[in-house]
Image (cartoon, rainbow, N blue to C red; front, side, top):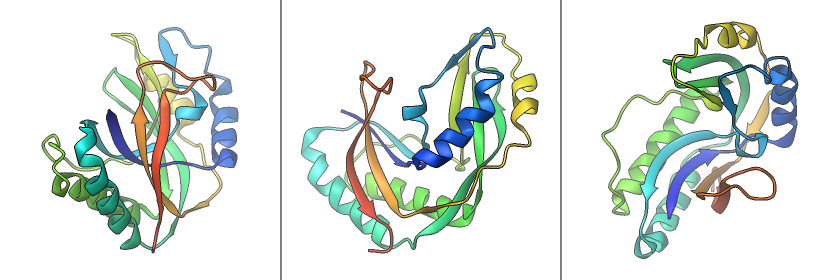
Length: 181
């Protein structure tokens, strides 16, 4: 199964962001991700064999226990080249990065073959673009977005399904652990 570790924003944060993107959501050349799929990916694992799941779950639980709860808010925007438009994060970024490092390390120690390590960029993917779409106008339109702060209290392990569910999401939480034990 295809897995990743993530922080899932609460419904209130998603609703605020939905209001902010409503004015640009009809933009041509963008495929918007479903609100139900908005999340902050911490560590993408790709395909993970069933035999690794017990150890992976135990290690994710330990990673979560070592990290105290922190506050986050959705903030601003950016883009990865011409591929993806995203919303950023503000608040407990050091804690978020540490949680990402711990989730990555937990996966590696459980035997998940992870891609080469790279600097973590906190982001929530809003839309993907058709090749050649200039994302700067959309980034500028969302640059001043400031969501309300919310407490991050949980590390989630999420499965990416090939088809969308009834809520429009391709994602299913298969494990969740409280931060700080």
